[in-house]
Length: 555
Image (tube, rainbow, N blue to C red; front, side, top):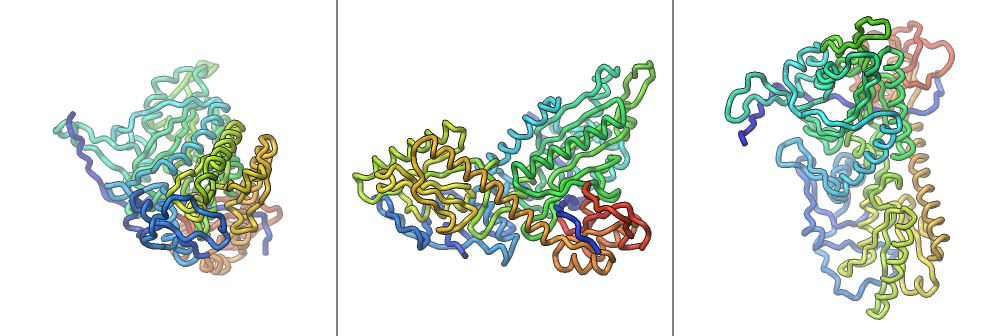
């Protein structure tokens, strides 16, 4: 097979960000088996983890297994979140075995545990897409450069991020090819061949693919040269249908964020400056991370007729007239995994919302004497089978080379919502101990939960629901306490300088919006759908304003 040669044009970083918002009120350092990491490179090899054992926390008084303990070589700490948020984030990704850096600078290898979170996102959204009439399909990764050039604002917006193929099979290509940065152009090329009459509309498809955007500054999951996403594309006969579709999809993303990821995003409309290249309108969900930066967690674009006119995508309407279709596109990516980490994680590690956790319950069997092991392991197996039969994702950690304390710390670091402990006394009493990941120490531990099938299942499901709700409540409280309502530009600058989000009336020009970005580093994250009533005055110009906007620094 002939080689492909990749030529890269000038590079700039991609601007993607987001935020989250509340109601309006206007004018333990933990020892873990870790190794040092850096933003430049990180990798946790199983062989290293196998050699390191953390000291059990003081409250763990239950005995270890009869196997000899592995000698502890080093105790390292997860960088405290308050000390260095970026280092903390990378520590969690590495030591929870979510991802690693690829051999090409800016790429990421998603490890099984990290990919399982992405699969949970896929599983939920796939059902919702199909319920609303969308079908999955696939478009090629290589796109003729001439396609990109057909829509002027599109090529201008994406040109700095493009990766180009110029040689194939050892020969210079007649036309350079773009490695897919997004698919609006190739989708329109095919839509033009498939759509002829109003009877062919609406046409609604989705694809789960990788995309490439050449980034200078990368951050695992949040911004990488290549990432995974779903991108939906639809064509409609009227502008009203297209607008309804764009809003329907951003509403679907909003519900997913709240109900599955426990992230209280703020849905809204992007400013003209922040609108997707080639779109008439861009809708967004903005999330507040633990460092109070905004993350653009998902977008839905009303493309109008921009691409259909560029590609000649037309249909014959009911009156026999030729019309250009009205289109949308919408996407959520693996960036959402980064959002979950940065929203819920703490100094002990990852904290996963139960609805998306690959493992919802970890069972840790504990015994001291050899003759106790079979009874404890049998009980653990029974508990696992009971919970699995009820649709709960559960795993038993029956490895004999680890202390219970090491296992507790390890699975806490992996973010498993619930832990069940079973020892000889528990077997005798027919009960278990249940601990919540979101409530550390003894406060989150409950003794004497019956192993009886219906009782145990009901209790575990109830606790998983409580954890899901508690994570959303905590994130919402954090978000709301870090949004400041402002009435002037000075107040906006002060709020941003304090690391908070600023929300205030805005009707100023694009030039003045760019001035805010230049002077404060903050951008308009969105004009929220939820708007306060009453008259408003633009914080920048003093002119009347119809809407409030949210400003924040972002990823």
